[in-house]
Length: 601
Image 1 (cartoon, rainbow, N blue to C red):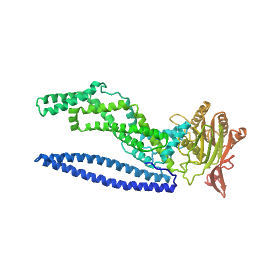
Image 2: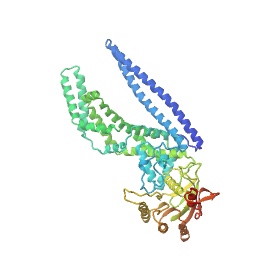
Image 3: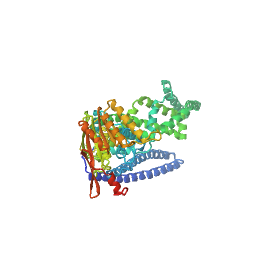
Image 4: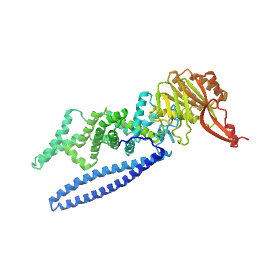
């Protein structure tokens, strides 16, 4: 599945996805024809078997024809299942490439929004549109297992904090970016139906449940000896009539042993059989992971886990599938009479659990991490103009041509920013709609990308592994009996508490203390800035209050003024969305109110 990765233009990416979707569409058609052919042959084979059965009434030699038809029919059933799985895979691959073409055009609204991860009280995700409609999660996530999506969301809300770990992640993302076949097969396998909420957790919970079967060698020997004696008695009964009494006694013994545990077996079966589909999905994901030839250390580590996991998880799925055979009442009656089938299946499942309970969480985590890496790899592949960040130990940020990744490339207005070393506070002033809030979100989102090891939307980006805190969309809460102003004060208090513990922070605040009068707001804002200066932080405070600009004169080494200007020419308002040094000189509230007829010109 490997392929060398050369960055493509947007047009080349379009053509690539179009070509792949066409190829998978053609392959689907061929697969459908094969499925129909196998179905017809299977029907003919079944009819032939019935014919041989009828002829065998008069001539027993036709019984061999029945056996041949039965073997061939079972072969066709297995072949049909494989073709059906292949067809489903091709259908998913077709859908993936159609979707990626749309994403290139900015249409990613059909992807999962991640609304379940929205948290208005999180330190930054709500302010930066990390989750929800039109969010970073919706644009980037390609995880299809439930746990994969949870892990991807967790990473966006809790970025990596160690420089070496981030750099290892960068290498891994570079590696999977080059492997479109691998990434899309992982995604397609994850799209297979069958997973239910809680499957992953319930599977892990099963590992902790004690077995209801005796664990000693005596019970193990019982499962071997009694079925063996029963089969011998069955054969002997054809030759010696008296042996039938022994056979019936052994059958009753088997049902007695099974019957004592039948209720627990039924509960166990109901619980574990629901995990068959998800186990089969996991095994296919592990199969693709172990087939690839990686170069990055992290990917090799995941692959080494997959080599061991693939066989064992497939075996677990097979054991669960074998237990499911008991749903056939006639077959169950027969095999439980001769082989104690139910107990044999449960015993083997419990044996598997005893042998692999400590490893299963590691194996499942390898699947989750692989999905996350593939999501980031697809993001990198679709945005070849982006670059990887340089992680530094110094508390400073240097970004050139910084832009928001969710804004169309043709509409982006890049900016350059150099902050630090800490402490450093930027006061950013400007008119309404000039770009202050967008700039704050741009910096915040790119920091989250950088600390997750994925490319950032900048020609260069240097940053430390620093925690991010924002104050942009603080909302009141009826449930918590909090006003907007009190909620904002709580957010600021949390930030100051962390700073007082010497925790390095990047702080992005937009028009703070809006819930009080202008004089009080101004005094409070100035006091807050002064409180930030003794601590290891980088802070940007966007405001309309030009008075805060006086702090640059009082603290020339720590506080700097920047602005976004509005241009008013020939009674027309325009913006260049460029960050400039100094205080804003033009405001637009009165102009817009006059323009809209709210107040007289």
